[in-house]
Length: 91
Image 1: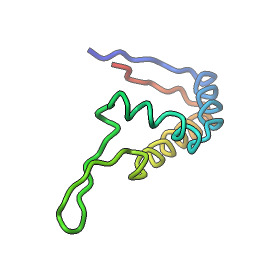
Image 2 (image 1 turned 60 degrees about the horizontal axis):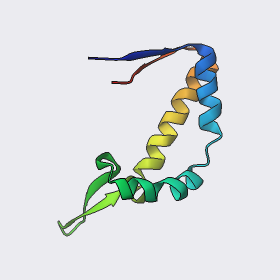
Image 3 (image 1 turned 135 degrees about the vertical axis):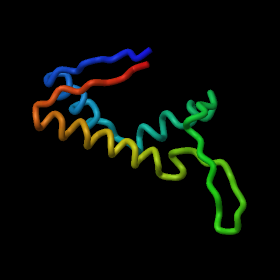
Image 4 (image 1 turned 60 degrees about the vertical axis):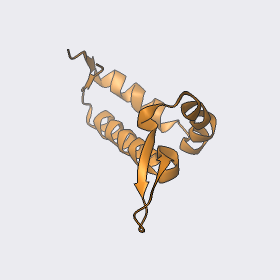
């Protein structure tokens, strides 16, 4: 079952302001140990080296956390600037 949440333009602007205020490096320093401690499965990726061997890496270590955060921040910045509403699926 989908639980949809409609963020109106003023709420989208509030989310944008919040995301713009986050220092990603600080967030990683403060939160990654907790994510590692509780072992959030989606926080880990398997990295395959050129020699075919594999090892587990966190999203912070492989750079995907920063890339995903930048994508999210950019999305909300564009939506806020355009005055758009955003529908979120929170299921």
